[in-house]
Length: 468
Image 1: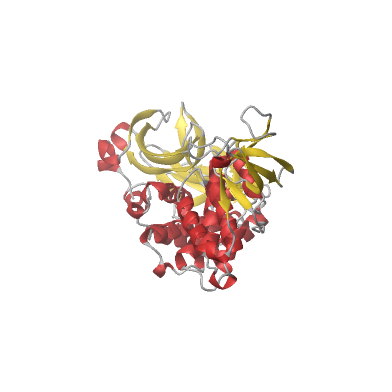
Image 2 (image 1 turned 135 degrees about the horizontal axis):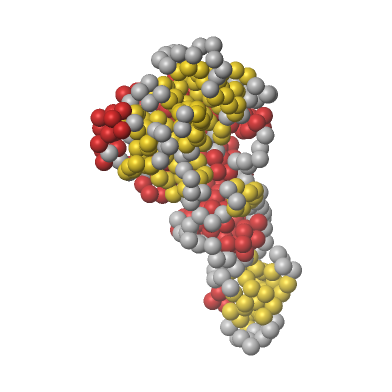
């Protein structure tokens, strides 16, 4: 909640402002003040203001040019709103903007209050949390700015993700926007997007709580009327819906419940996105949705494909939560299975495909929500083995790898990988030797690999997201 501000105030507008014991530059420095700090002015002397800082419970002197006087009368509300609008779009001034936002909320009459100030303050809080999490080049003084905004009721949640600390705005003002019956559709959409960010979900959340949260996220996004949105916000909304429906589909599949409808909805929402409308600022949201939907897309395939040819694959329940796979050879129906393996990942049997010429079989297995592997059953040195191809090997965070075809002249496996590594999204197409899965060729586009043009799988080309 935004706290009420007292009268006779000034706002600090410069970082590293010295609060001194006396009105002179050589006086003892008591503490440093930061932009957005709110002080009570108690006098002026020799170019210095005598102030009291209630947050630190300390008085002192500072240079008058480091602060701006603050008036909270109703007549001052329009000017405060102008400042809020300016600071809302100025990265690095979030603490100052939130302070002016709190002042505006104090000055504006209740009858004139709209969703705009709540939206502006919430978005600045979100941007400040992103900076504290290490996204963007600005990391200096962020911790101090977080302390400044906390006095106005701006609270953050924190947890560890991918080996680093993640901070997220807890979202109270976004909820206020959604609670206003006459809030503009753009503001409502911004609020829903702020409250449904996938990177702000604690990875340690249990499956039951996660399923409840995903349902809440879905409901928030479904309430937004996309017809009244700008093109950019509409595409962001579709991308976020796609990511949420992909999460729902994964949760259903993990509970062994039907997940096809949710996965199909995720695909539909993703196809409604126009990437060119997102610009550089929001393209990462679309790429994140692509990886999440790409990982779950086999759930929309429905009934597992009928297996034929020299190899078949049987799946059965193992330990609680496990699926056990048994490979059988058609010409040896009564012999012991050449290979067997159990996994806690989701086994997409519809993806199983036999490579008759190479005497091998490929299968998609999804151990995590946004991570899908490709298992390759093949013979090596006269013995059957299972090799697991992952979306990436260098600091992988999310992604998928999939079978794209088979080139029989050189016994090569064609695959497509798309993943996020070190915060960057990468897509590549590869040709691997089937006997040892060593890399033969790779390219950023399938057109650069001759075998892809001639031997790529027709079903893969039709259904994959890697060729979007």
